[in-house]
Length: 282
Image 1 (tube, rainbow, N blue to C red):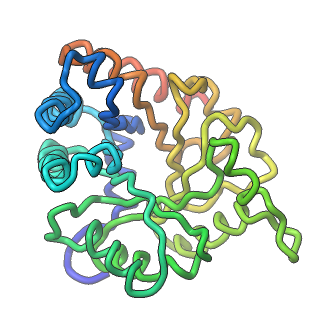
Image 2: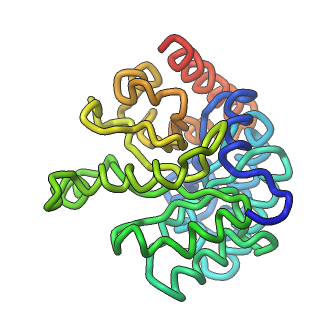
């Protein structure tokens, strides 16, 4: 890494210790905008995202905007996303851009420049990426993340049923594809303290994962808490010894309480307390 930027893993570890590990998703899909009494347009998008940032960016470790829900409005939606990222980071939250980018060569490098180059309009603390063109295809993003002090979350063991046909497939060496991704990440994070910057996306709804080595010395972004069926109390059972490195993501479980700011804060605080209790007792 060049410059003076502290690595993402170190910044994330401190934020988790100070604020708890909760990640709140910013997912302004049409049905949720309607529940908030907002129009499915750019004005509704901006009101939604700014309300979430106002409510929780000063108290949760991570905010995770889902890029697709902004991109669907074209350039004006992306402009709202830019403001959302900047305002969330200014309020003290780390921002994980959920864009799941994945490609090869110069195209992957361009995606990395979009989200991981410091000074870029959408520069985020970390980016979700897909390794299913081969883990090596992520090298431009890995290299730029190291340079800028950013991080990556690599899709490894996702909670969607379709993911199993790829992630659970067994390679010629007898190791599953998902386990291979975890091994790559462990190598990226070797020797990093207090936490590496290259994490995995591992679903909290997957049940017993004891057959996988989740000890990658990096964070584990865990969607599925709340509306998708997993509870904070499930985290120690699912993640075992790696539970202290888990960043549990809650989206609808918090967002459904909007647009009332105090209600959003109360919901986030409740999930944060339940997650902290489950992790500390593990």
